[in-house]
Length: 479
RNA sequence: UCCUCCUUAGCUCAGCAGGUUAGAGCACAUGACUGUUAAUCAUGGGGUCCCAGGUUCGAGCCCUGGAGGAGGAGCCA
Image (cartoon, rainbow, N blue to C red):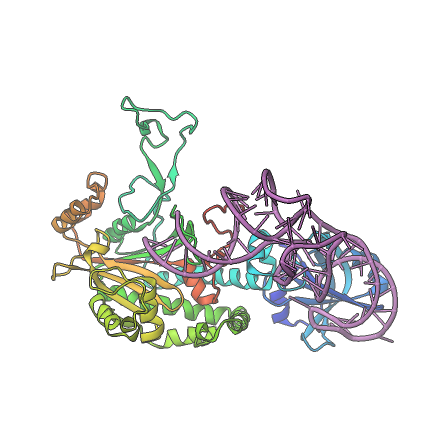
């Protein structure tokens, strides 16, 4: 085991007047004739540790201790004479593990724009903001597993490479080992996929749901948590080409059980992060407040970040049907004054502006909408007795929009098969999916939570590219 | 993919009616300073004005095309 200590532990333990060794990256150095102060951060916490070094003793080494350099320090942990920190280390020995030429090192001891930091994503983890974000990202991942494990769910690894593009969830990335310069053709002149690696056309997964359903109809309660790929040319603050999705699937759950789980799950995740990352969350709360202050009054959030998170955990989500949503929109002053770009009428898909109105203006809290017209939803959703709606549910969050999409699944073989026919979903490719309805079918439900969208909500960040270490977006796969 | 905006020093940005040598703040370097807190003060170095073409006596500025970025929309998580 290494002999050095994590700064997070050093600050917590407060084992005063003991000799310790710490290693980390220099954030700033301040010096006068006699003494130099070095703030080093090792990523273990938001806090940096202050190193105090006598200039006379360390003159040569101090010249190489610049912002961004990596150093190892051995010294005595003592109470700080300064006001900003409780303890500091009186350096006895300083070793420069890696220099950082201050003229060319991109990060300076000043605030950088998020856009700039995206261009140096290989270094941005060394900043306060991204350190906090990725520590929280870890905690949030951990919370997901904790939640499901505690409730008897099994973590199911669904495939990344799939043959079915039947779900119709947008453009897919093709997976192939064929030589693109010399693609084998069939007699009819089409691409001969029988010569491809899997002997058929394959893609990266757009959802683990169909396979998760197979798991639920055997293991009972399962969830997936893995990468998901969409080749859509989406350029927004809420879309990635590669993102992480959590998809629980539950046997014997109806749409109401599904909603209960979704609400409880999301609240748990928020509470977990609030409890386990108080320092990072405090930092992001202040950051959020500064960001808000630069906005126009009408665009400002009514609540601070922490305030909003606490609010969400304490209040129940509003639950309405699609028809009720249309009713509310039709009666709204926005509609009457013609403020909506897209006209409101039963049967249309709710546009961003409508969802935002419901969540941010009308209810001012998360909203779950159920009972959508079957025409605008996927083939596998359970058809309601009214013959025109399905047991779908969308969970809408302020500032984010749709954070969860789910449904009770159609367990009736005939109805499912008929719907697939109507929507031109190839049944021969999905024979295995249909067999679960043929053999021992049962009511079941599930949903998908966009992990990065949850991150956006919890961290208060405005752009999804800033809550994943290395974002994949159209024209960007640099790192 | 559509609409709008942006691209000038390492970073954030200013620049004019199209006119000689392109500016500021921060960062960085050097010096000063008896414990600093993104230290302070002084001095200094630093430019492919995104790329290609065009108009013009003359283009950072005007025109055409391209690339990249941001925000919004659609698609969705």
